[in-house]
Length: 314
Image (tube, rainbow, N blue to C red; front, side, top):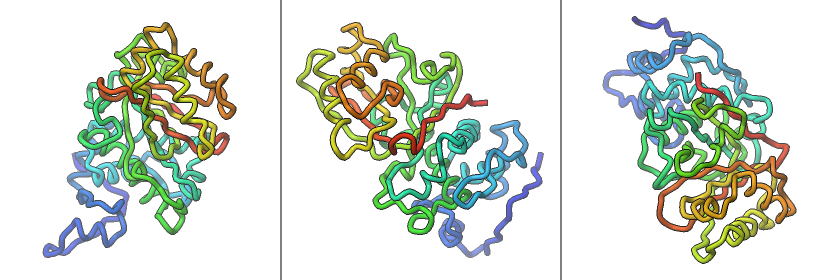
């Protein structure tokens, strides 16, 4: 059934390249986008039963109206499948939360950007990567869901680099960053359970993060050794403190788990052995490939500038 579209339609001459037209309209993130034809937008909207005209949020700094239809348009341009749309809609709802402070994230001279963490069975249903190359290329769901959020921030929120987006450096995650937790790897509560949801719930957590930093510890064979290395990395003078996302690699997590430590124990150890962090500031998850004694640290913007937000996927 055809939708009655509310968004402005741009007519393109048959001889013109629609991808180039998207560049001329300023709708891209620097990479080519999928032209959002009415047929593609209608197909994208089949991924939700929410009304196309429903307002999800008004997004700063230009306070553009992020309706379901407009979000769907950006999801088309990002290359999403229709079944990804509920995740994107929830991500937009989450970044619009007051505690996330999207206005600050969009206009700061810092280099933070929304990072999405997906939890729950939907990770497997949509093939959202939680393993090899977790922060890298190769998975359509990760790349396009994260990219859709960025395009929404730019095209609806008005976060244009050099204009209202005043980030001094930015980082590649400002194009796309969407990851999933490897929940089944160890007998630890996954991130969304620690944040008050049930394990069977599907959730999106948004975190204002800067560029991920690798933590290399191939020498430590004890939990204390690994955690001391993490403490040294996150306590470096250049890190701003406040909320920090720590992605514990599989080999590190195996050692820590076998020593009987829980996520709560890890947070307590780091808080006691650093002078920048409270236990409530540390977001912990497990992910990445099974080989290599690596973990990742994603510094935040610094509390209370922005706080992570977790929302249930409708």
